Length: 113
Image (tube, rainbow, N blue to C red; front, side, top):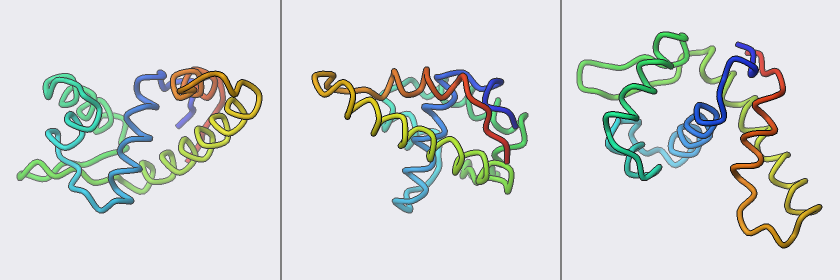
């Protein structure tokens, strides 16, 4: 999947999903919504989008899992995000939270599984 097809909001979700997965937290709508501070309906819609893109699957019990393509995309997105945040913190130390700028920057790059 090319990153140019992913919006900054989708990238934010993927970075969050990656972190929750690494923390061994269940990938459920409620967990992700709570972590992002968003409404469950918004998260549900985004996860449906990721399912349509082949990045996630969801069990009957509502537990989401990354597909192989999803894992590759998340690794690529997370690596680019981490690098962008490091650069922004180095170059612009007065900026308290460079995460949104990092999502905007990496949304212009390509990420392929």
